[in-house]
Image 1 (cartoon, rainbow, N blue to C red):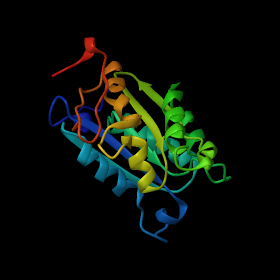
Image 2 (cartoon, rainbow, N blue to C red):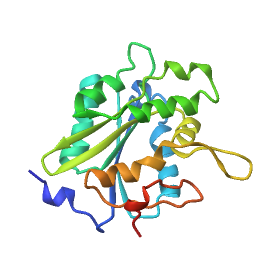
Image 3 (cartoon, rainbow, N blue to C red):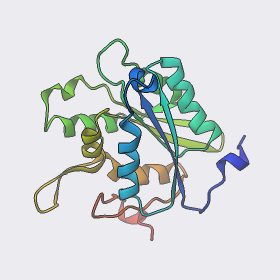
Length: 207
C-alpha cells in the first residue's frame, strides 16, 4: 500500500533519492562523513530535474543496512538509493549482502561497469564487491546501487572518465540510471549533458 503523504512529489518528474553512508567510525562521530556530501554535490551538479534527498549515516551492520534500504523505498518512496562504503573484502564490509537481502532482482551490470572504471586507476578495483538491485513492492520500485567510499571515486564512477577535451572515454554508470528508472515506472529524469549525458534508445527519448 502506498504511503500517500510521504510519497508525494513536488513535481511529476521529481526524483526522490536516498543516500546512505555506511561507516562505523563516521556514524560514531570519530570523523566527519564524506560520502553523503560527495553524493549530494555531484547529484546537484548533474540533475536538471527536481530532486529531493533523504540521508542516512549508519554503521556497518548488515541488518541495519537492509532495514535502511527498505525504509527509504517502502516508507519514503525513493526511486533511487545510493550507498557508499562497506563493499570491500574486510569482514565488516557487508553492504553488498545487505543490499541483496533488500532486493528482489539483481542488476549486475552496474557493479561490472564500476569495476571497469576503477581498474583504470588501481588494480585493487577487482577487490570491490559493489552490486545493484531492484527493490519491488506493490505500486513502487527503487533502484539501489552500491558506490565506492572515496569522494573522488564516487564522482568517477557516476560521471565516467573524460579526456582533456571533455569527450567520454569510459561511460559513467549514471548514464543508464534515468532510463532504468523509467523502465520500472519512475519519473523521467534529465541531466546537464556537460556533466553526464543520459542514454536512451531513440524510441524512448523524452522531452
